Length: 111
Length: 115
Image 1: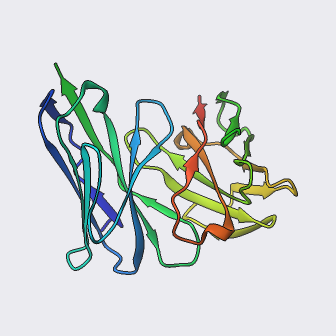
Image 2: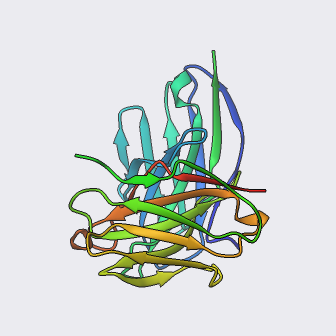
């Protein structure tokens, strides 16, 4: 079983739609959680951290369920510029800053 | 303030050759991590350097080696290149003082193609 699992998509949505991505992780010792965004042939860029209490940044909302080992990302009012691959990332509680990535979920927003 | 910088941007090699990739961390950062991202996959952790030593290593063979210099910059060396080594190689830097749970910021990557 992969340490971090995501639906690879692609998710095809029209502009203005709301879309949700899910991610599960296998190691209960995972300590920190993030969503990264990666544009085609570019480096991953941090989108937001994910906290147990849930957190929001504009149109983006992230949720963490430690009991179910499940992370989600909700994007409201999708824009064409949101088209990208969204990577779910965890850090294990090893004391080292080793990021463990999912395979990513591809989002395509169309006019 | 420059972020993480990597060189070269692109590289083409043939099987059996050796390659060296370079990374300069963001100013103020002392830890460098390397990742390999194959097409359609998420980045995979190769190893991490701090104080010029390898702190942790992922599931990569000994053909992959690295080095960190006193100025915190780092090199990734790959020997006996295989077709499967074709990938985007990403460098990320962070500060040990930030703790083990901070996110990392990546350089633009080096795209390595093996013919």
